Image 1 (tube, rainbow, N blue to C red):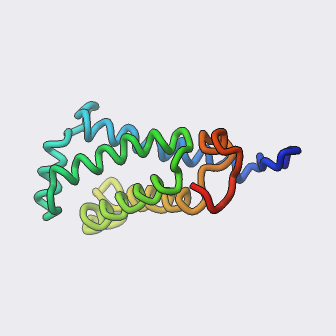
Image 2: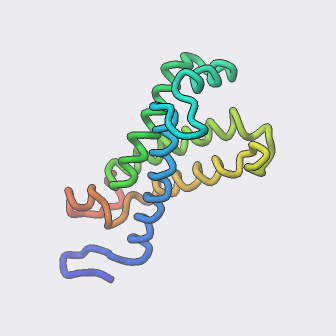
Image 3: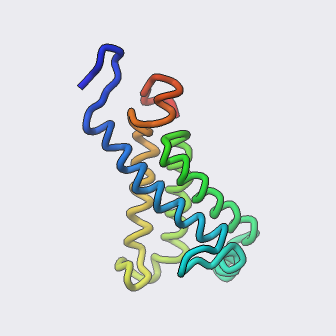
Length: 151
């Protein structure tokens, strides 16, 4: 359905808001757990950096902060629909790396520590990186356009 000013309020475009909401909440909660060590299973930056060091990741403390802040701030940006393509692409890389480094050796099933969950997050974030935020977004409100070439 198009309005007189050319905006597209189709189910497809509005549906992107639900994808952003789902991913945004997941990444904000994950980022809070990493950065602030909150929640029953949260470990904080030190524990996360220690795990990264055991995996052989270079500069584990810097990387832990980078991932934690990316998930926290990036998740928030997804929620509001700002810088969606860039943030979603970075989060897709984040989850692809987690899939390969941590979960792949455990098989597919998430209850066994497998890659099922991170694989879904990778592909979902990649989908948003390719599609953009949709019409219900701060970016749309600021620019008034939904061009497929803009971020």
